[in-house]
Image (cartoon, rainbow, N blue to C red; front, side, top):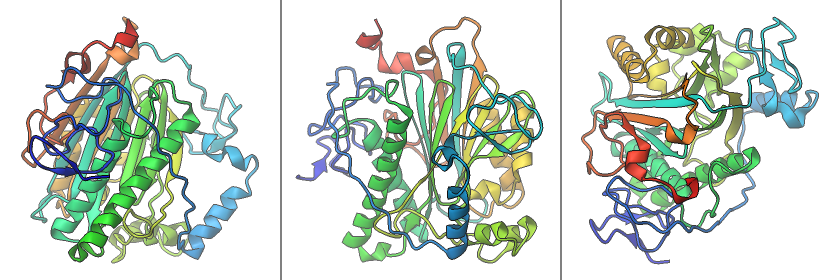
Length: 418
């Protein structure tokens, strides 16, 4: 296939891209998924196709991590491991059929009804106090009440890290806005199909980074983390590679649950009991990862599922935040501040006050109760802020500074909703 060149600005996009990553123009070669378009686009074809590639990861996993994985595999009902209900009070894994935690008695089940929830989203990224460039990238995409959020933390130095995280964001955008991936409606996918779609997106992101390295040897050694969250109704599905984190903060009690496990060597040392969590925070290898995009041809993502209820907050962040703030501190700010825009700003401000040693990126997704019970797909509000100036003010998918807005005003009425 020929290069997917934008007819408006000349930017060479990924072959699967639907919109130009640089200026937002609809591309001629590919078709967008229903409703996904930049603000100024009004008349788009809704057809897309599917191209799913199976992967057979062959990873060089450290022995300690392999032992932990083997231990998980031996648990009762191991096939349902990621469907266990984790108690947000004490952290215990309970069987999917449990109503209350077997250890502390806290309620586990959440009603399936998701009308009455309104999703508020804010994303911010800061260069920090030490670095001269921002190697992080954040992304938010939304359609019919479905939110997809991404935090990618690039590595490899100077332009290389920024390029790696940008490629990851561009690949994810291409996968979830159409073009050769299926005519599915995101609201109708089964949970298993969503998980596979997230795996495929990260697989394609890994390919994009590796392709760039093969084309330009000056990028040798670059890579990026990627932590994605797919939020639909009262369910969260997280796909994770690296050490950017996802936290879920209970809106009623303020309990903090770190959803993801870091793919770092110090995490192996902590898990095996060789060092304490406090020692890990100052360990000279605390930033060394054993799994990231751009390292090997096949990389495996960890998948997690969680329930979401009114008042709960999902926080995605790069390690520039967690280098300076503990999970409990993040939870305290979320509980005290409440508003997602103010939460993301206060988290970044505090990390900068404490030194800002790395780039700092935060995405906050908050579920609030809407008493009018208007269907969720009519109630998505997004705010994105980034210190880097936007390359195009009209590009919905370009990380830039936007005020809060109602998606229906941008995307227009979906004929399938009427």
